[in-house]
Length: 261
Image 1 (spheres, rainbow, N blue to C red):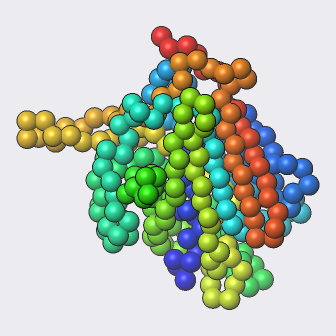
Image 2 (cartoon, rainbow, N blue to C red):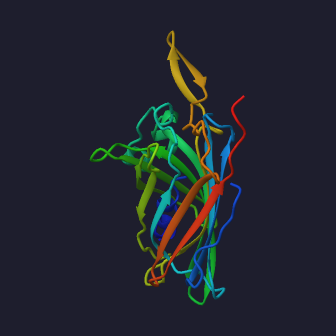
């Protein structure tokens, strides 16, 4: 029961990306907002990408459960120079030992998620800490692991995977996730994701390397913002599909940051 309650959290997080806040397409049964930002926000700089999105029903009721998510990044993000994900984390070790089962050098980011679970005639909201880690490659594509640990009211730990496609100067990267439907308790309706707030990048991460036989801490380098900003800023988008058959798309644009000093 505890695992089912949180399983929709980790698989959604991934991921990636703020200053503009735009609603989903009008007329959908669900409405979604997305906010993204760079930290630091200097052109050409190594950065942490932050994002948060919120899902609500247009009727004011609990939103329909998610069935799939695609998060899209703007083109031109430099993935080559990043030192994030120097180590690979095994899903089995992560599930068996938690964060202690994986190297600190496999961590990519962190965040928090909120879901709502129907329990009879009432509903309960559950929050979970989210850690994002580098997983093993699969068929030439990068796997991202999401480790979720419930904070309140039901303690639980879960591990999920997402598939990341890195971008180029022309095409943006993306993260595609199929979201399973899981009930909070047997025979209950699936839980609904209400919000995700997360960062992907070196902010608040510490890596370690061996220097003359000693473990020395260092700050990893994140992906780099392009040296030139496109007209209108850096566009991000997220598309969502829901169990009731509706879909929604939220867009956010990070304004052109200051030039690198």
